[in-house]
Length: 201
Image (tube, rainbow, N blue to C red):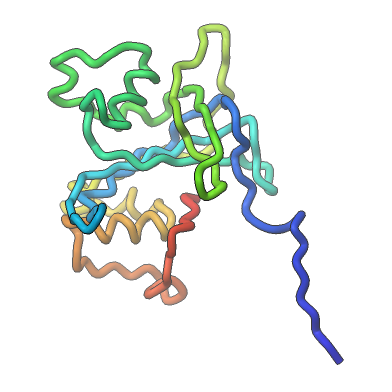
């Protein structure tokens, strides 16, 4: 007797945001701490953040909005991805005063338009964040807002950290600020290999 496994392409994979321009709303602002970067053999450490948007026009198999995320270096320099995306999103450049310190937690709950393209790995990625036209309306927010800050965690406030997915928590715990921190992720998750395909939710 044989037990044959087959591939059913129509049922494979997690639903992904389609390419094109979408109405969206920022639902997560996550401080990832100072992360190790390596490029052409050179190692550096950069403070990074992650923004996660829900896409009300597209849903998963459970009827919930799909989400998409983007990693950024925490910098408002005009040549930085964060600086460029926020300038486009706001529809105006930052003033010299704003450049001295802009609180990105203010982005949580703010609607926008996202231009999504197919990345090199075949997965969707955000290339442009734009303001919503005056005549456009974005449906009410579905997911709970989460704003996580590494300094808050260091001071003992773990409430927002515990709301993050296991994958994002592991990235945070790899930060320079939290290296060596011991956190119980549950027996089924301790020591798990995340790989690169981390689903934010």
